[in-house]
Image (cartoon, rainbow, N blue to C red; front, side, top):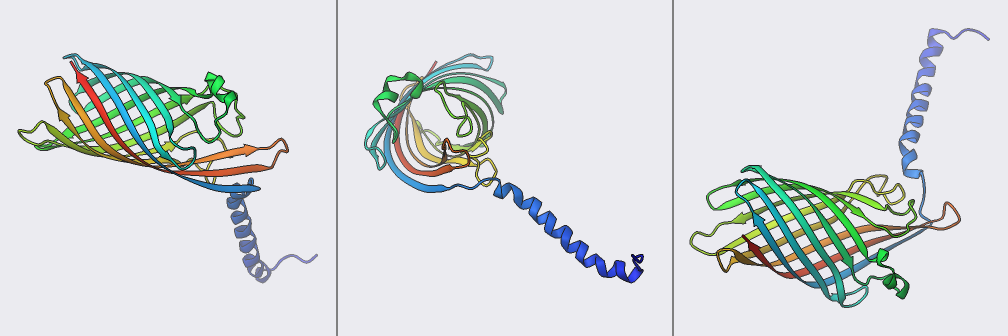
Length: 280
């Protein structure tokens, strides 16, 4: 075989470049073709609900604060399962303000779920099916102007379940990040405080088959507008309207490995709520 001349090397370079580009594109595309969903379905639900709650908070002058709250959700309309009791959240929260602009808090929530689209007598009889545990840690930065207060809260939460699950389909321990930005308006001489906030919830450890295009994804977009009305020196009422868009990816992997069913669940939720707050 004759040695390559300078002309041969120059002529061969475009072919080598094309081969390298093709290999590079193939490697980049491999994650996208790691699996395919043999069955794919999209389900959309619409919900109208009422929420009632109460929060009792004990404050100390050194910046420490202890809170206990109860939050009840009732669906008055649900296009998926009909009207029913939806959820109960019982929360114990401990917070500390090292400086005026920063608050740190840690807490626990007991979650009790009502009926859903997969509800059955067997699930109802097993508490592990409808009881969940949540731990969370938050950091909130805020700044107060003359007639308004703005704040940004970042919360990492861990949701734990005790029932039996297929770990390829879902986690026993879900970690997510909740990012919330809001503002409260001060009305001079009036016992009312209008407010508005927006929150995004993002998965941090969704299983591989549940991920969206190989990535973690946003599960909830929530916005709420309301007004807090102070009725006494220590107590107040909170009236609000909340709109939520929820998105989830339900995975079912059959016993025949490789056959994966995906159900994309979308939910549009409208909520009207009344909460009672007592601070002392």
